[in-house]
Image 1 (cartoon, one colour):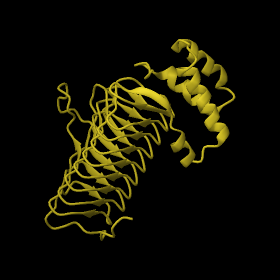
Image 2 (spheres, one colour):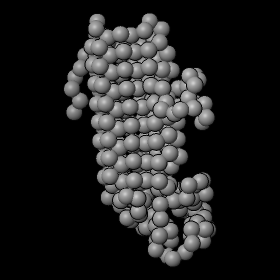
Image 3 (cartoon, one colour):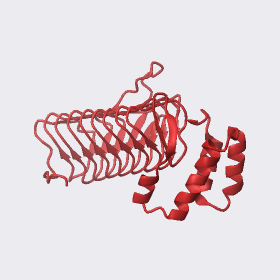
Image 4 (cartoon, rainbow, N blue to C red):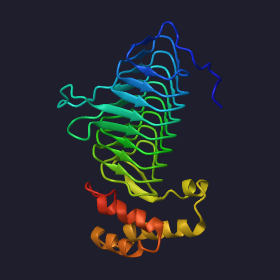
Length: 264
């Protein structure tokens, strides 16, 4: 359970720009620095020694721990002080030394984090990433620029993800994975480079997927990885089954949008 820190407290030793928009019940710890183009919504707790630059919009009931660096300039040599932004949703937990950077003009000028995510210590979210909801990034996992992560994905500690990769909903990346291609929904990967290792069946059970749904996902996995079909042929079979199964439809949609090809 979370500790009960007092809200509606901005420590006198914090440096908060007068132009920042801070809800009345936000707590900000000592020696934290909040920039002028920062908006923080109700119920959010910010520990000591946190730096939040901007432009940045942070939603409700987030918890940001000491030494996190939020909405800093992107680590992109093409960046030339354009007006870019970071958006963070609600109820996210951002632990020690996490870094999340703003977007770049070469993409949509926006890095976006959804709701109910856990970023463990030393994780890094680079410019222009899109993080869904209920995502877990374990210690020191790192995303390069333009990476998209679907809802309920779990990224193991010290995993690295190449720029422009997409990780689908409910996928699982084992500790120390090196991911340079897209990971389809529900699939477990691991290794350096990452290879498929079945579906995330345990995670699906915990999220109350039925036996029938899990069987459908296993069928899609076998079509992709065990049938001997070429990727285009496997994709065609999955697309044909997509009209009858929501899980097949997720596979088909993901494969159709993949630009880097998939881990295979």
